[in-house]
Length: 168
Image (cartoon, rainbow, N blue to C red):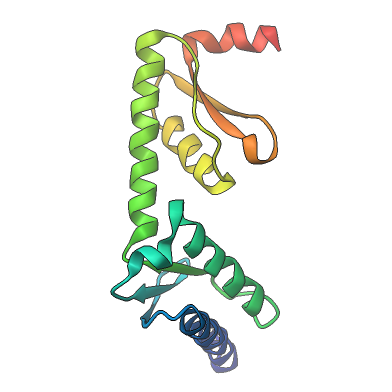
Protein backbone atom coordinates (compact mmCIF):
# COMPACT_ATOMS: atom_id res chain seq x y z
CA UNK A 1 0.00 0.00 0.00
CA UNK A 2 1.28 3.45 -0.80
CA UNK A 3 1.40 6.20 1.81
CA UNK A 4 -1.66 7.85 0.19
CA UNK A 5 -3.69 4.63 0.29
CA UNK A 6 -2.56 4.00 3.88
CA UNK A 7 -3.71 7.46 4.92
CA UNK A 8 -6.97 6.94 3.07
CA UNK A 9 -7.55 3.62 4.88
CA UNK A 10 -6.78 5.30 8.21
CA UNK A 11 -9.18 8.12 7.31
CA UNK A 12 -11.97 5.59 6.64
CA UNK A 13 -11.31 3.91 10.00
CA UNK A 14 -11.35 7.27 11.77
CA UNK A 15 -14.63 8.28 10.07
CA UNK A 16 -16.15 4.99 11.27
CA UNK A 17 -14.80 5.40 14.81
CA UNK A 18 -16.02 9.01 15.15
CA UNK A 19 -19.46 8.14 13.74
CA UNK A 20 -19.84 5.13 16.07
CA UNK A 21 -18.72 7.23 19.03
CA UNK A 22 -21.35 9.86 18.16
CA UNK A 23 -24.08 7.19 17.86
CA UNK A 24 -23.20 5.77 21.27
CA UNK A 25 -23.20 9.26 22.77
CA UNK A 26 -26.70 9.87 21.34
CA UNK A 27 -27.77 6.54 22.87
CA UNK A 28 -26.49 7.92 26.21
CA UNK A 29 -23.85 5.18 26.45
CA UNK A 30 -20.42 6.02 27.78
CA UNK A 31 -17.97 3.81 25.92
CA UNK A 32 -14.48 3.51 24.58
CA UNK A 33 -13.87 2.18 21.09
CA UNK A 34 -10.77 0.05 20.58
CA UNK A 35 -9.67 -0.21 16.96
CA UNK A 36 -7.81 -3.33 15.86
CA UNK A 37 -6.71 -4.15 12.35
CA UNK A 38 -6.75 -7.81 11.46
CA UNK A 39 -5.61 -9.40 8.22
CA UNK A 40 -9.09 -9.41 6.68
CA UNK A 41 -11.02 -6.74 8.61
CA UNK A 42 -10.94 -3.77 10.96
CA UNK A 43 -12.75 -4.29 14.27
CA UNK A 44 -14.28 -1.43 16.25
CA UNK A 45 -14.69 -3.06 19.66
CA UNK A 46 -17.00 -1.14 22.00
CA UNK A 47 -15.96 -1.28 25.66
CA UNK A 48 -18.51 -0.15 28.23
CA UNK A 49 -20.30 -1.11 31.46
CA UNK A 50 -23.65 -1.70 29.73
CA UNK A 51 -22.59 -4.08 26.95
CA UNK A 52 -26.07 -5.65 26.78
CA UNK A 53 -27.44 -2.36 25.41
CA UNK A 54 -24.78 -2.38 22.69
CA UNK A 55 -25.48 -5.99 21.69
CA UNK A 56 -29.27 -5.89 22.02
CA UNK A 57 -31.64 -8.80 21.67
CA UNK A 58 -30.00 -11.46 19.47
CA UNK A 59 -27.38 -8.93 18.37
CA UNK A 60 -29.86 -6.61 16.71
CA UNK A 61 -28.36 -3.38 18.09
CA UNK A 62 -24.74 -4.23 17.26
CA UNK A 63 -25.86 -5.36 13.79
CA UNK A 64 -27.75 -2.08 13.30
CA UNK A 65 -24.72 -0.09 14.44
CA UNK A 66 -22.55 -2.05 12.01
CA UNK A 67 -25.01 -1.39 9.19
CA UNK A 68 -25.01 2.35 9.89
CA UNK A 69 -21.21 2.51 10.14
CA UNK A 70 -21.00 0.65 6.83
CA UNK A 71 -23.35 3.12 5.15
CA UNK A 72 -21.41 6.12 6.47
CA UNK A 73 -18.01 4.87 5.29
CA UNK A 74 -19.16 3.30 2.00
CA UNK A 75 -18.39 6.38 -0.08
CA UNK A 76 -15.04 7.02 1.63
CA UNK A 77 -13.78 3.47 1.20
CA UNK A 78 -11.07 2.60 -1.29
CA UNK A 79 -10.93 -0.58 -3.36
CA UNK A 80 -8.49 -2.03 -0.85
CA UNK A 81 -10.37 -1.01 2.28
CA UNK A 82 -11.00 -3.84 4.67
CA UNK A 83 -14.52 -4.41 5.95
CA UNK A 84 -15.27 -2.66 9.24
CA UNK A 85 -16.86 -4.81 11.93
CA UNK A 86 -18.56 -3.39 15.02
CA UNK A 87 -18.26 -5.69 18.05
CA UNK A 88 -18.88 -5.51 21.78
CA UNK A 89 -17.27 -7.68 24.45
CA UNK A 90 -16.32 -10.35 21.89
CA UNK A 91 -19.99 -10.90 21.00
CA UNK A 92 -19.31 -11.81 17.37
CA UNK A 93 -16.80 -14.59 18.16
CA UNK A 94 -19.08 -15.99 20.88
CA UNK A 95 -22.04 -15.89 18.48
CA UNK A 96 -20.08 -17.86 15.85
CA UNK A 97 -19.11 -20.44 18.50
CA UNK A 98 -22.78 -20.80 19.52
CA UNK A 99 -23.82 -21.29 15.88
CA UNK A 100 -21.10 -23.90 15.32
CA UNK A 101 -22.24 -25.72 18.45
CA UNK A 102 -25.86 -25.58 17.25
CA UNK A 103 -24.82 -26.96 13.86
CA UNK A 104 -22.95 -29.81 15.55
CA UNK A 105 -25.92 -30.70 17.79
CA UNK A 106 -28.42 -30.55 14.93
CA UNK A 107 -26.06 -32.59 12.75
CA UNK A 108 -25.89 -35.25 15.47
CA UNK A 109 -29.68 -35.22 15.72
CA UNK A 110 -30.09 -35.58 11.94
CA UNK A 111 -27.68 -38.53 11.88
CA UNK A 112 -29.24 -40.23 14.92
CA UNK A 113 -32.82 -39.91 13.65
CA UNK A 114 -32.01 -40.32 9.96
CA UNK A 115 -34.35 -37.43 9.17
CA UNK A 116 -33.97 -33.80 8.13
CA UNK A 117 -33.70 -31.24 10.91
CA UNK A 118 -35.10 -27.76 10.26
CA UNK A 119 -33.49 -24.88 12.13
CA UNK A 120 -35.21 -21.63 13.07
CA UNK A 121 -35.05 -18.76 10.58
CA UNK A 122 -31.81 -16.79 10.71
CA UNK A 123 -29.80 -14.16 8.88
CA UNK A 124 -27.79 -14.95 5.76
CA UNK A 125 -24.57 -14.58 7.75
CA UNK A 126 -25.74 -17.05 10.40
CA UNK A 127 -26.98 -19.53 7.77
CA UNK A 128 -23.58 -19.37 6.08
CA UNK A 129 -21.83 -20.31 9.33
CA UNK A 130 -24.19 -23.28 9.77
CA UNK A 131 -23.64 -24.41 6.14
CA UNK A 132 -19.84 -24.12 6.50
CA UNK A 133 -19.80 -26.02 9.81
CA UNK A 134 -22.00 -28.86 8.51
CA UNK A 135 -19.92 -29.05 5.30
CA UNK A 136 -16.99 -30.21 7.45
CA UNK A 137 -19.01 -33.08 8.97
CA UNK A 138 -18.98 -36.36 7.07
CA UNK A 139 -22.41 -37.79 6.31
CA UNK A 140 -24.33 -34.51 6.40
CA UNK A 141 -25.36 -31.83 3.95
CA UNK A 142 -27.54 -28.70 4.17
CA UNK A 143 -29.86 -26.52 2.15
CA UNK A 144 -31.70 -23.27 2.80
CA UNK A 145 -35.50 -23.23 2.54
CA UNK A 146 -38.08 -20.47 2.80
CA UNK A 147 -38.01 -16.86 1.76
CA UNK A 148 -37.30 -13.53 3.41
CA UNK A 149 -37.50 -13.56 7.20
CA UNK A 150 -38.58 -17.23 7.12
CA UNK A 151 -35.39 -18.47 5.39
CA UNK A 152 -33.84 -21.28 7.41
CA UNK A 153 -31.30 -24.09 7.17
CA UNK A 154 -32.26 -27.74 6.85
CA UNK A 155 -29.65 -30.29 7.97
CA UNK A 156 -29.86 -33.49 5.93
CA UNK A 157 -28.27 -36.86 6.65
CA UNK A 158 -26.56 -37.92 3.41
CA UNK A 159 -28.40 -41.25 3.29
CA UNK A 160 -31.50 -39.07 2.82
CA UNK A 161 -29.90 -36.79 0.21
CA UNK A 162 -30.43 -39.01 -2.90
CA UNK A 163 -34.13 -39.50 -2.04
CA UNK A 164 -34.50 -35.74 -1.54
CA UNK A 165 -32.84 -35.02 -4.88
CA UNK A 166 -35.22 -37.42 -6.70
CA UNK A 167 -38.25 -35.84 -5.01
CA UNK A 168 -37.30 -32.33 -6.18
